[in-house]
Image (cartoon, rainbow, N blue to C red; front, side, top):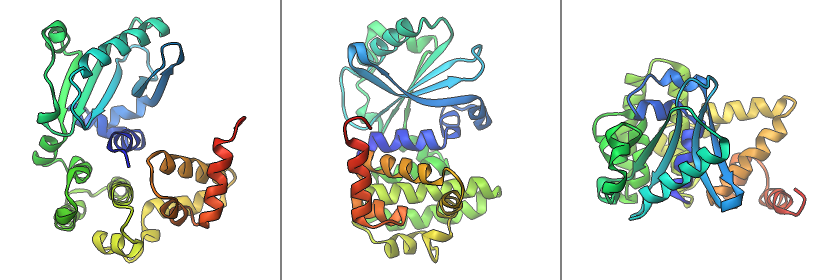
Length: 265
C-alpha cells in the first residue's frame, strides 16, 4: 500500500478535507472537482488538482509527501509552471504540500521563498493536524501509527465520532475513512478483526457497504463496482481483500483486473 496514493484517494473521496486542512469552510468543496492531471509530452502527473466550477476561484494543487525529497519544491513549482503553460491558465493558483511530519520537509529554497511569502505555497504536517484535535486528520494519522499502537489509537478516536459528529452523513464519511485506512494499511487483518476494532457488528452495516449494495441494484451499479476494484488495486490492496469488499470470488476479481489491463481497455 502506498501512503501517498491512499491520501490522494481519500482527498478525492472527501474533498471537504482539503478545505478543512487549509482553514477554509469545508462546504467550498461543493464547487470543486478533484482531478489527476497527466502531461504526456513531458511525462509527469499532478495527482491532486482541485479545479473550481467557477473560473474566478483559485485552482489548488495538492502534493502529499511521506518521504524525504530534497527537490520536492523545485519539482512541484516546475510541474505547476508546465501545467499553467499547457492549459494557458491565467487565474489564481495555490499549492498545498502535506508532509507526514515536519522532519520530512527539506525547507523551501531561497529561490522559491517568495511563493510562500505571497501565500501561493502552504505547508502542513499531518502529525500536527492530528495533535491539534482534528478528528478527520486523526483518522488519516493512523497511516503513521505502528501496528502495536493501532488498536488503542482507534479506540481513542471512535468515541469522538459519536460525541462530535451529529450529522449522519458526515459520521458515515468518518467511519468510511476508518475502513479505508485500516483495510489498505493492514491487509493482513481479517474482516472480524477490523469489525472488532471499529466496534461494529458487521462492516456491511456501515455506510460504504450499504451504499455499495444499493448501487449494485441500480443501473450502472456494476460500473461502480468495477471502479472500486480498480481503485483498490491501484492502492496495492491484496486481491483477497478486494474480493471481500466487492463480494466476488478471488478468481472473478483477477479476471476483472486482467481485462482492465489488457490492450485496448
